[in-house]
Image (cartoon, rainbow, N blue to C red):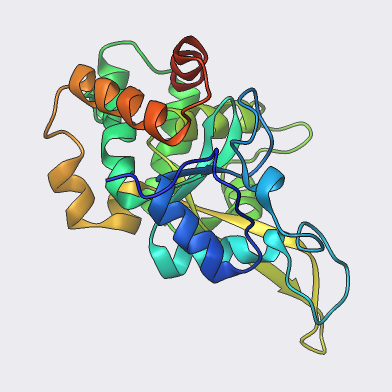
Length: 232
């Protein structure tokens, strides 16, 4: 049941309010996109988008804690941009994007490249794994293997890989520095039995219809053709 919509007047100013938004809407894109108002960026409270003070946590620092507390899916799911998706709605989203295939079956049917299969297997066998460690493991560097960004984005978009946390590096004194480093895993490993039992229980077409209906409810001012374009 939809309790509020993106047309409502609201702001998100804390981890707790972001968690509520993910629960209420099911889908919370991090960045502004083709549908006006459909993002955390456009609803974040003043002063909470970014702040470089050591004592203040902004929307950028909420990402890891929110993912871990909610066990929600996070990744580049819509228009190659990052989105929070609640567990409840990720089952249908992953089913639709996977088109009913697990990854091995997708590869066997010629629908995935060998490069994508290799990266998927590296993640599956070593999850959770930081992006920097994953690149080292796969020899994604100058003079080595190419195509990491394309493959990792494709695997997220298709619902096979998600980001389970953002880890901050620390110096010798234990002080945090830099941006959080993405930690990758598979939905099967992060979400467990609930995911494996629910992801394929509908046909991809049924999941798609459910997604369209839900998006029209949480985005009452959006054109349905644009909703379908974003979902596709």
